[in-house]
Amino acid sequence: MNKIGFDSKKYVEEQTRYISERVNDYDKLYLEFGGKLIGDKHAKRVLPGFDEDAKLKILQRLADKSEIVICVYAGDIERNKIRGDYGITYDMEVFRLIDEFREYGLLVNSVVITRYHGQPNTKLFINKLEKRDIKVYRHQSIDGYPSNIEMIVSEEGFGSNPYIETTRPIVVMTAPGGGSG
Image (tube, rainbow, N blue to C red; front, side, top):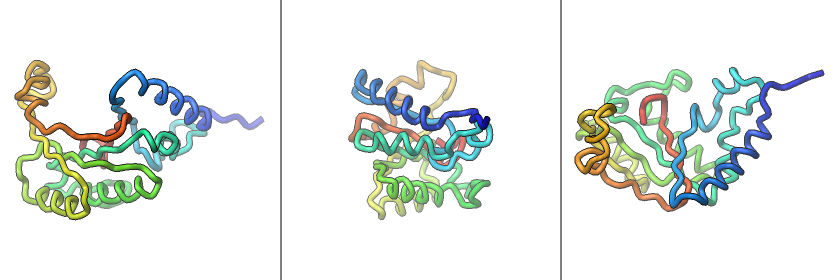
């Protein structure tokens, strides 16, 4: 008897159903999936039977209700941080992700640059994004993050950064790599 440890088909069906039901309770439902949205080989390795593109399949089923916002830390752009799996810098990974998501019929609405303070390489990256008609939001560091909750949720904290405009009820937040968003 050949048993699988994880039922990807059931996972996709149930997660899609659950997200579809949950979005009705909110004006916006913000989601962040653990691991990669496309080609999650780590999940496939630790969950026998997991489809490495299961999260992508969920998003494709919700494509008419969802959009993707990519966040990237300005420091990763400045340091030319490289993804170990693809051997490309985070700025190139953002462009690759945008293209790949769009190939699958998913809307990438914008890119958020986190902890931005006018860094020169990041300025060049922003210009490249804007030349591709991608909306870019610049978010500065917040003093006391992550422990000073009162400051973080104040007008001087999150309130000091521009609001990210979204057009669909499901907003998926992602990044080019762990810790970059």
